[in-house]
Amino acid sequence: MLQEVKIAKPASPPMDGLPPESRIWAVVAISVAVGMASLDTAIANIALPTIAADLKVSPADVVWVVNAYQIALVATLLPLGALGEIVGHRRIYLGGLLLFTIASLGCACAWSLPTLLIARVLQGLGASGLMAVNSALIRFVYPSRLLGRGFGYNAMAVSTAFTLGPTIASGILSLGTWPWLFAVNIPFGLLAMAIGMRTLPLTPRAEHGFDFLGAILASLCLGLVILGVGSAAHRAELGLVSAELVLGLVLGIVLIRRHADHPAPMLPIDLFRRPMFALSAVTSVCSFAIQGIAFVSLPFYFEDILLRSQVETGFFMTPWPLVVAIMAPVAGRLSDRYPVGLLGGVGLVLLGIGMTLLATLPTSPSILNIVWRMAICGLGFGFFQTPNLRAIMSSAPPGRSGGASGIVATARLTGQTIGAALTAFCFVLAGREGATYALALGAGFAAVGSVMSFLRLTIPATKP
Image 1 (tube, rainbow, N blue to C red):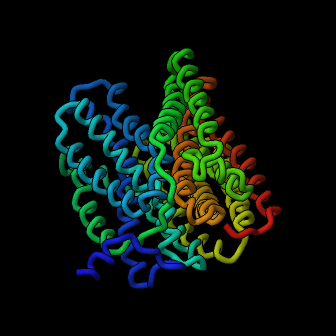
Image 2 (image 1 turned 45 degrees about the horizontal axis):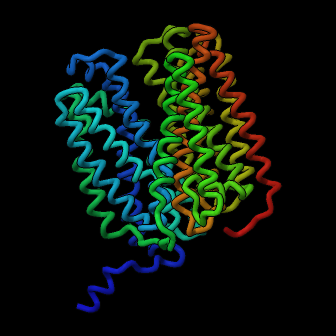
Image 3 (image 1 turned 135 degrees about the horizontal axis):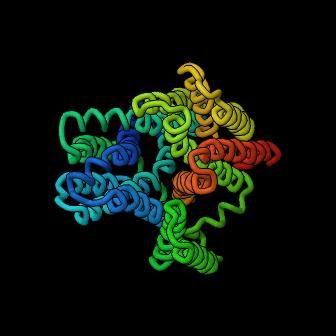
């Protein structure tokens, strides 16, 4: 009996990663769960017209099926990352997975738009629990010498989910109704939970308490900023956009002042005082802004300017995430040996070249002409992503892995949202030609990001 009680108590995690046999299963649990959350983002977009027709709502209203999920996800990343440092990343991950699975059942059973939106908010909260501590868990699953490889495999799982998302959604919709898009998550969620409960590591816990008021401020700050950027992208009234953005920034300032002397601030200003962390986080926002620009503008570019069909457009969009999935583990292995500033800088240079080549496509390009340009973009993004992720997590102390992991996910989603909003602005200014200007803007972001990445080569190596 005494032995059972001892096992049930929180134990110290392995000093440097899990044993190989446990590591494999822990990676399976993490990859399945984060893949589900990533896949759900992709398939929901495909199903919007079908959902609108079935629930008899307008296209403007059904867009909230995506917005509700995204806002709930982004707004709670930092609070859940901070909570993971206190109660353990394992608990947050498994709790998020459980909520995501139950909410998927709720989405499948929804009979109206309001019930579907409630379920999507809960699903976003569950996905936030997964993504907020995902990178932190990987840090404790892999030994430090294999950390880049671990992040590479994780990036491969996410990219594969994005690659297969439209195909899986189309296949499900061809065989059944839209609720099955959400119901398919349930068996995978239960499987990942069963494996995760047995294999995910116990992590160190902070001694300070959880700041509930700070969590509310952080959620409102991020939620309002993302909502404001999204409102701007949808051409909402200037007064509404300004109010959302200004109020979000004011709450952010209040939060920073509140946590000025906190040992682990909700908005991790302590980590941003580390040059490697700050440069890597800002570079991450730049890279995902490029991705947001590309993934919003390219379908319009292919269909409206190059006059390609929807089927062809889907085919043209595939090489980017496919090459990222292939390159991510390769770049991860390289990041265990070579400076991340060099690898990330080279990756963003390649991404900028790819965006420039896409923006300067000839009037009637061949399929091969389009595909190899998209492959260069995927090569550059894949070469950048994993080393940069390693840099963010390695530059933070182990006890602040939750805060660093929250910034990883926040930077990704913030960058994608900014990219989408800037693309919408380009369309407002230039009409159908806005897609070309957006791609050129993406190349500019890549140039700025590559400079910041190379600046990391000047930072002396320090232990977290």
